[in-house]
Image (cartoon, rainbow, N blue to C red):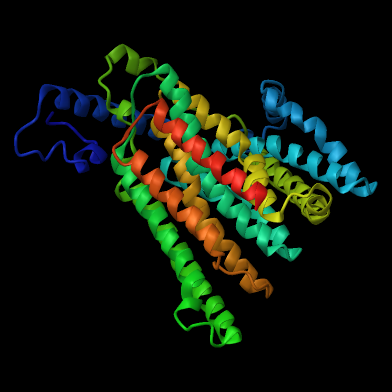
Length: 432
């Protein structure tokens, strides 16, 4: 192994063991070294980007058509023209709400596919950054639109609901469905510890402004509200900085911690040669144009959706908290949820955990603080303060998720336990 040149595996500690290397470790290191060299040679031979690669309208049109007609979820796009028409024709609010919720589901899927396509083009580090930044763009757009309407309760509950749906419902379904196919499944315990620690930090971040009123005995409500705003703005800045540090930790300095166990398996030379490097489907300008157009359509659907929420709540009897906590998160993350469950069924648990827990982290320490800062810039009083029941639900859910993911093992019963917990939360908000 004198020519071993994979810095990631060297950093992981295999090469530095004082007890020497086993034959399996040597084989793994040599295999990964060959992968690194092969990848470097391909990049060196790759020509500069030509105009044909920069923009290929015919190929982009063909690829987007294939993408739309090969996934049954895209049938929901048939609801898009009805959703737009229902707003301009002043149809009942419940119809506007339902059709716009349905239309957002395939739009979120399409946006995710385009983002992943751009990520492939820019490599592992920048690609991971693009995925992390734009992975929850639907939630960000919807939250900002709701904030402009003054529906701060729906904004906070929808963001908290997204965290809960990912931690309890998505991870629960992944463990349950995967456990039906495999007796035991494993994933990176190191990544789980880092993720859970960040979620605990986010719990502290919402606890502090929510509990400050108990430190001064409710003596001066106006002063208390001002303190909550100032504390929330500072915490939002700190959390955003922590999110950037987390990305650097995950993508650069300690990316080996987040590598799937299956990625370190020993494979023979023939299998290695058969593996093909993933190529982007769309041209650069084509992907950017598609992302822009999809984002604009999502923004309009979010606008129509937000305008109907209050009337739907009054006529249906559903509380704004239930709509924000349960309905909107499930609709906005439906495609992400399905993807996570499908990969878990194939025993790709690290990817499933990355989708579920990773999305929760993005919302907790990036999207939520970002919306608070946007509200600050807009002059809207939106803070990290939650009512005590919401704080309790979030903290207890994070504790439960920590217990079931900390050891890096899962089976169907732990999944069923998480799903049951989410059902209990949903029932409580339905009657609350």
